[in-house]
Amino acid sequence: MIDTAPWVNRSHPGSPTVPLLLSDADRAALLVMLRSQKLERRVYVRGQALLMMADGVATCDVARLLGIHERTAFEWRARFTCDAPLSKL
Image (cartoon, one colour):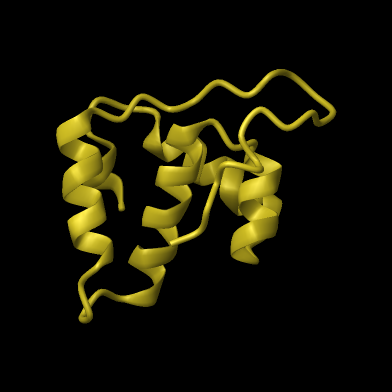
């Protein structure tokens, strides 16, 4: 797991970062899922991105930390902006 504390509310160009809504139950289920040894890498990376976005890390920083393209991170943010983000992993 990546420590997001230094990245939360970091100044960056563009509009202010709005954290994604993630309920406590969803966050707990996601953390359990990420601890699994049999989880596919692509699902693990998306889960990490979802946690970071819910913590308020800027999307460009999420891309940098996970080693993915910035456009991919923005697409994932749009995907996770729904009532059941865990179903979109």
